[in-house]
Image (cartoon, rainbow, N blue to C red; front, side, top):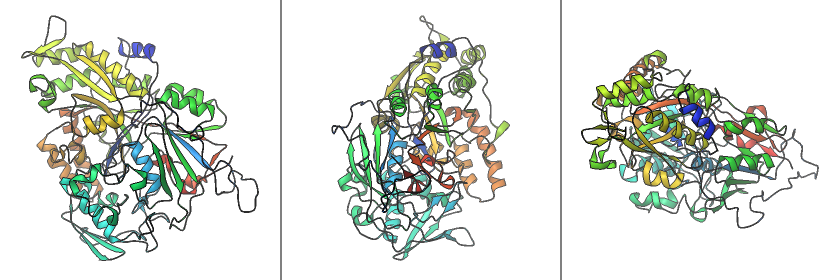
Length: 600
């Protein structure tokens, strides 16, 4: 689910949130994230710990002097085995159990150590890569209900056991079991049965047409032989996924160490089964207190790759001739989410019950100003949960809420809100004051939260921003739906526009990602209609209806799509053009990383 930054932004916040133009300020981030099979809270969890590894050299790659068999000096032109890469984050992981990954940092770590059943190519198409578990693309029956997958017989877990159909069946059966509480349930609960045909062949029989299902196959598996005896209700808290010594993997690298809040290390698996072997021997995933500290480490050369450079420091990073910046809009969008569960409010009265009140809030927030002044023009305004310029982009079908303080005041008055003695609105004895949670260390959200606070103060609503350490926030507040409002983003883990898992009332906590307890029966039906056909033109028309309804009813204030400036130490980290990071894909900043190499 999400992640990122922090900075001193008092002047920009005053300029943006005051009476000037539109504005909120931001850096970069994301959860998501994720995670859910189709979406993850994006913007990495922020980590408050700034301590360095206890070992003075622990922040250095274990193999700092790569060399080839001939003893020649490695070059940037020829892939060379050896050496290490240091990747920065300001968020720690939660768990890398593939059935529970739902935040960006955990997804980063999982990407290093697990092989996916299938991968995605640069265009977002399903692909059976040399490092994928599947031997070939799935065979799909004429009625579109049965997918048959063949596994590579040579695939193995890091403990030497083979990867088999049992692992695939176990993973999907467990994820679709509500007792497991997997965030990916919405992508697998349309599966009627998973059948093991033989040790290396498995068939998925769907209950109905489910257009996004192929993307459910682009995911990592869990080891049946390790977890088969763990009670389903205990899986989320099991040591598998949170303790390196108890986590069996099947990817190019093995998880060797986790110093909480400081760093994780991964070592190339000498017995990795794939025909393509990793060149990089050691990955160090360093966790910084915030994005400012993270960027300083990048500028000093302590970090080789940063996934999201804050826009406030982007010019300084660009000025470094030895750093390459990769930036274009990604599969992320930011939002402010309302909670409709009265249990989170005094007197069990949700302040966001009225549609007109939610529309007034959207009107009071200067979203375009956020894009112009916080994102520095690198973002795109959004009015619905579909990425701009994607095939499902609803364009004018979605309602746009232009920034208008006076109109927002009038709408609130029409809805029964009247100023109290202190100027804060009151209705039926309920004062319009709420807490807005976001992850600490994320400089963009810190600025956006401050702007929202000022914008809503201008219309008589009191907002108290609260920054919380990401990992604990996701576990204790976001996942169980215990908050009043939050600021977060989704990182779409595949190109399909289906959003049922985060907006349908079928997926309330803890077995789903609709953490705001939002219910709209019309939308519930539209999501089902949208994925029940594979005809893209039909789906596009349905999602236009979704956009109109959801932008009118507003479970979220949709803010903007944004890109994350990825910084790479170009004199050390090398890749062929075909393996260059791909900003448009979730985890695309590690695209084909198995083919990358490093030089001193």
